[in-house]
Image 1 (cartoon, helix red, strand yellow):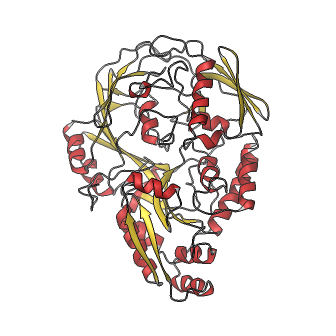
Image 2 (cartoon, helix red, strand yellow):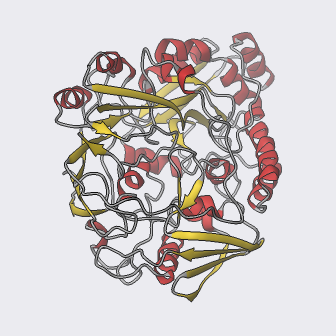
Image 3 (spheres, one colour):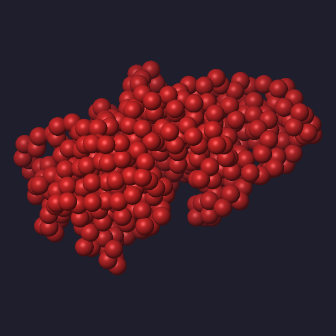
Amino acid sequence: MKERNTMKTTRRRFLAYTGAGGLGLLAAACTPAAPTAPAASTAPAASAKPAARVPAGEIKVAVPVKVPTLDPHGAQSVEDVSHTVLQHVMETLVRRDAASGNLVPGLATEWKNPDPTMWSFTLRTDARFHDGSKVTSADVKGSLERVIALKGALAPQFAQVDSIATPDGSTVQIKTKTPVGTLLANMAMVPIAPAAQVNAEGFFKKPIGSGPFKVLSWSADADLRLEANLDYWGGPPGVKTLVFRYYPEVAPLVTALETGEIDFTWLLAPDQLPGLQRNAQIKVDSVPGWTYYFLWMNSSRQPFTDKRVRQAMAYALDVDKMLKDLLGASAKRATAPIPSTVFGHAPQTPYNYDPSKAKQLLAQAGLPNGFDADVIWNPGSAPQDRELLQAMISYWNAIGVRVKSQEMERAVWIDNLNKLNWDMDLQANAVTTGDADFTLGRLYHSRANRNGYKNPDLDKFLDDAVATVDQDRRKALYAQANKTIWDDAVGIFPAELFNVFAYRKRVTGFVPTATAITSFANLTVQ
């Protein structure tokens, strides 16, 4: 992989695809709303079908990373860039409303939770796939069963599913082994495809769905081109053609935005934004997002088995100075293992910069002379990742901890990460569903074994939070989980990142949101 050294010459790609603001963007202007609980028992009324319109023009979108696949069910089922593009083609039972952040009807017009272990969904009767076939309960069943069978990153969210029944063509009943209060939010991550075709060879090279756009063409090294679905049940989209394009370098991308070669992008480097803000043809929006930085320490590997060592690593860092010097208005200091915009966040007491205390903790752990360790990372995880890691290494060196950077290509990094073949790991992550369980339950439960940390008390908080549809109870349990992870320094959580969007003013109708999955279906061009 070509090594990339600076933010000015490199396209800063995100793993979690939600971005950071730039110089001159005032965070105070976009204060996040308090996280709200997802609806649990009964769906809101389905929105009325919009007035008919004729799609016109084309919007060209530069995505922050190359689209790795058009298959949202398997190994890359939590890749936000794939969900961003595929939501225009394939739909889910429920979706996140861009303005409110609430879960609202998608392919399901209503849902009920008649008992703690049963979720019943009623499907739209007017939704059809792009080949003209009707969307039925069998398609929902087939898609969810495929997610579970492929055992990808999303599959653990459905570990408690006991059975999926289809009493008729428009009813889906999901029975769980225990109550699952997060099932509704998780279903917003399961795109529905035709059951008769979803397992066919080559289907996901040009998939069909029931969404507002159809796939015209795509390959891993070419643009993804979509065309308007004039028969979409929700009414035709705003534009005739939607194009997703990837630029590996930031300079050509910015030039393309300035010249009109592309219309929309996000996740630009902070130092690129002032120039774009001065361009009369470009608008820059910023909102607090669901993405955050973290540094994990492998709690199953010496010396990080001792929480005093992990805490020492946290006390060694001057986080406020690092954020001020490197990220500015593009981020704010994190106060929990998940962002403050996410349901289930509970603020904790920050680890203040205290190198003396860090050395004292190391001495108490039998390491008065420090130790040697490695940190793995994949470039492009978040803005200024290289610079942030270099600053961390410098601070750790000051307390006698000698850290070696191990930069890896993405596939190699993921392989080592999943095998726990690392001392420390630096990356960014998005709480894609907006619910704490997507991150806390998926990454910190003992059965996940993602970072070597195992704590039966934490497991119980997380299990109990999932096993109730009482959202106030869930929030209280996640508060305990936040505190446990934070106090035991399972990781260091320096920053919440801002979503920043830059687009030409010919694009109308865009509403910036905290979610990592951006929709372009209702945008128009002048």
